[in-house]
Length: 125
Image 1 (cartoon, helix red, strand yellow):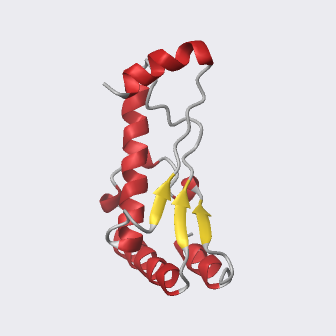
Image 2 (tube, one colour; image 1 turned 135 degrees about the horizontal axis):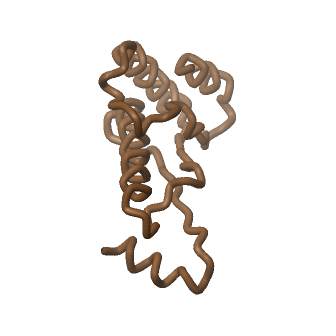
């Protein structure tokens, strides 16, 4: 799967922004990335993909799936959401070492207007 990321970046030379699929690591809240049997190969492929992205002046982004709910009332859902975003951070770190200036994770709020204030309060706690 990760070699396909490298392939896509190689063939996307005119694309300066590339959104990686959040499904790059399915069920990622159920295991530790470093515990995967092929973790070294995965990390190597991600590092190479990051090297290509820098060489091609591409900015890599994630758009986490709809079930990421940091402002939810359900504590376990918030915990899973945080874990999923931590994995996104690990992937971006593997791609770039430090991702603060070259990558982005886009988060959205989908609460109804009436619930928005309560959601914002929970999120900012």
